[in-house]
Image (cartoon, rainbow, N blue to C red; front, side, top):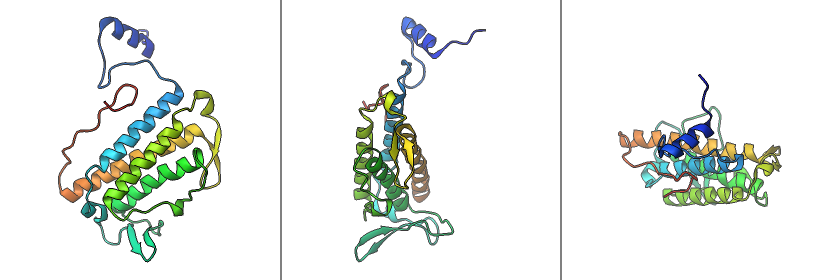
Length: 209
C-alpha cells in the first residue's frame, strides 16, 4: 500500500474539511519558519514552567549543598559548575536558562559583548522570570528575518567556535525545553503535587491565540 505524503494528507483533509491532532493539519513550513516555531514553543514552555514562581520556590534547596545563587557585596552570583556536579535549585536553572537565550542572542545576532560569566543574576523570582521573557523575546526577534538561505551562515559562539544559525537556534530551544522540564519537576516536588495550570495554546503559525 502506497504511503501518503504529508501534502497528500493535507489536500485530502482540506477537501473533507477535517483536521488531525491538536493543531490541525497545515502545509509543511520552510526550514527557517520551522526553526522559528520550534523556538517559539520552547520559549512559551520555559515561561509557562515559571509562571507564578515565588521566592520560596526560587531559593528552595531540594537536597543539601545545592548549586544555587548567592548574595555578595557586589550583588548576586551563580555557582559556576563546581565539581562534583550537584543538584541545582530552581534559581540556578532559571538564571542559567535565561542566560542561554541572552548570551546566544548577543553572539548570534547582537554585538557579541555578553560573556557567560557577565550575564545578570536576578536576586528574586519575579525579576528572573521577567529577564527570561526579555531574553527569549530578543532571540526570537533575531530570527524574525532569517531565511532558509541564511540558516547555514556561520556565527560566533561565546566559547570561540563558529556554528551555523540553525544549530545555534536549535541549541537554545533544546536548552529551554530541557530546563523547563527540570523546573516543572522541582515545583511539583516542592508543592508535593502536580501543578494545575493549562498549557499555553498556539496558533498553527506558532503565535499564541
